[in-house]
Length: 273
Length: 273
Image (cartoon, rainbow over all chains, first blue to last red; front, side, top):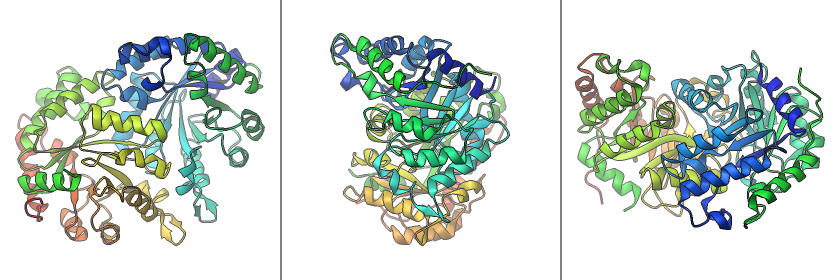
């Protein structure tokens, strides 16, 4: 089954395009977990968040940096968290890997084969060679960074190259690299730039978009959904869900915030197929 | 002690600027290791290579993708390999991480604090925000991708932006981000493009360069050394050393190839300080 069909299935079940980002910061854990050993606390935090938000969300996006920061044992914590994600949900492993040749093939193996991710994020600076090895598995998707939601995205991504901004060129390189396997190449487009999202959507109507930056980073769910014009999309929220409450009710509060966001991010595609 | 002083010390000892890249591909292991379980075989391969090339090399550069491709236990293999690198040598962890804010801080923690790397590689596509968190430790260095040695580097890095190629802009963003802490910001510049290396060296005379692509990728050691004009540099070779022989003499052959390359890559800076 191709990635777009799997995406539709997960979203039809949830009724939303909400992806919950798992960025477990040991310094921001809720009060009941704060005095526990870091590994255990991060694992239990992620398990509680996953369970509390699974109803509203169609996907989870673990941010690899937060697991790597725990040291080598962080990978075991990640493995436990992945095991707890229901089969009905997609997993996007967010590592922004980007390298060439056998190195990129190794990253694809690590993410898709060893950790069984449904999708991942890829950095494009090394060009087409850095993207192609992630596009070899028909059911999986690599979301390539096009336009990100941070302020210094402007340092490079908005620079004009040959009459267009760099991010548009990047988007084209990525989409063309995946043209033989529809759905394998996706784009990361920040929620903080709805105008550019709309323009990228017009240029690439069938390409899956991963849109971070709703919630804590200030992107508006309404504006994103309007700009997206019904294309395949995953909209990610991390901190506003994870840290919805610092107290004993953290999981309940996360579930409520996920439900609130899901209502703003409805899936309108009908059942898959 | 700042990174440039530490680099000089390691290079004065070795008499060379050679860095040996550890990209252990299970499919290319030498014959005596081929039938062993993958983890064990990769670990023993890396330990044998490290020991055989330590005399000639001043640094080792484990490529994280190859360890991640082993699954979560690959991180334990990496930990064992890092423990075997002599204190006289520098370790560059090559993961080309690139993200923003707390995520980038987590990657820096993972590489510098948990794995105790002396340097790492960083991808610049998200702009200055993605570089700065790696420049907070005076003794360590982040080599930011500027111009890479692969063919499709031309897809983006050579595009003209505001009257100069993108890689020059990237180099400036990276070097300026580290201006308060000299030596913390380095650049990755491929050995296959000596003309551009020379021009980047003129623009950034005191910036450490990490130069991959000598050996299997076709870059010439002589041309690199001439283009570099005596600036702080690490020149990396991976496959030509690792796979110098497929037989029982693989470690000896790797040591000989490293010694051959080291003679072409002499350190001319005298003792540090």
